[in-house]
Length: 344
Length: 275
Image (cartoon, rainbow over all chains, first blue to last red; front, side, top):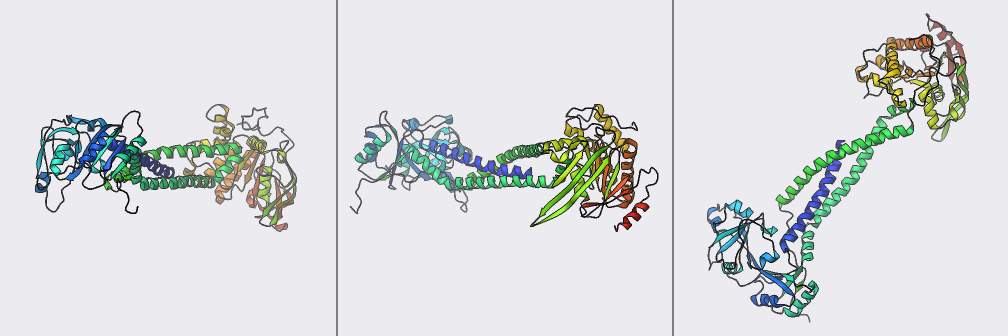
């Protein structure tokens, strides 16, 4: 029974861990792209220029355009307070359009409010960051900017639940208005623009219009499905490994069950012979064996599911803590360039 | 318990057996020119080469012979545990060798009781449950009514009253064999077949088992066929059939002797036969 339980446990853990990862990928994709249909990303390090953003905004068929600037920096306090032997943990700053961003991306709050257009130096932080850095609504968070801008303080007006919508930020995420973020980092560039397609316009049509319209700089164009597929590709190897383990365990478990029952029948040959001598029919003997197998199977399976739940929890905890599997930003799905190739 | 076996009654399909067979007199078991051939690899082995015998009701017959003589094979055929290559076995008026597996199984359940050399008790069952096994297989509740009374009766017969709740691993070898004997007798089989029942017991304990077998035959008219290579065991029988090389080589009539079961005369006779 223990053998059956172990086989079922590993199989259950493999399948449930795989299912959990699929769910996590789907959630990450949903968190990442929200309600957007398309994402235009900068190919150059300087980001999308304002001119490009203006063109995007005015392309026919765009219903909502939410620009964002994403950069990493450090909390100003961390550089002075953290021992020199230990690197401080960076934070991710996401500069957003306070009006457009909430249309395409849900930002559920634990406390406080969302950013407003009239806000000056205001910030939203994630619940995780607030907990780690002991911050709250009404408090202040100071971020390191460029050498020229120096550290800048922002008033915390709201706290977003959990880790926020960027998995790669690992919970250390701060929302600023786009203007504030650009000022902090001394840039006018935009990292990406999330778009919603207008009713009656297909995504493919819009993508075709971009090809014809955006001539200012190269860019990356991603659909929602492309993003989800990219995230799944990140974890594909691990999920395939889990399925392979599940298949091997299933085969081994079936063999183990067969072997165990065969040995049981062989060991109890004398008892079977006695029962037959005493007048038990072949079908009755078969019923005894099958009933025993059924009971062992059910009991072992119940035990295996319980163990499997525990193993799945441990597996997923290890995956989450090891960092070996991260749901990172999408890779290139469709690189566009307005310039003809040099070989032409 | 009454000294005379009860007259057999028509039974429904669920009762384990009619009382000691259908007829009170006459031949209860007959073998007609039995042969049994086994295939071992590329060659055939004739375990039995045309054996014919008759056992009368209430008789105690011993099949005696050296190892490999075919006596255990003969016992299995007589009890319907195996099919002969040719010939017939007639048990209480039914031709066993012509029956299908289901019918042969029914016949074994209703008409025979087996005692084996290695006890063959069910280790997870206690003494009561082991003795009650024939009733359990037949679907009769062994805890109530006639079945319960009969189980208590045979436990007294083998002197195991009070040990009902013990498991086989809590019993001595002799006690285990007595449980096996009680199990074989509980359903009042037409014939009790014992294959080397003392083979795994010490001298004294084996003697106790043989005495109980003889007592069940003498007092209750139980028909017994005993397979043994031990002259002392065979000396308890009314008649000894000497089996050798797959055939009945000789028949020694010892008669029913209530007090003296001395093996001396039998041993002398066997010596004359070169055994």
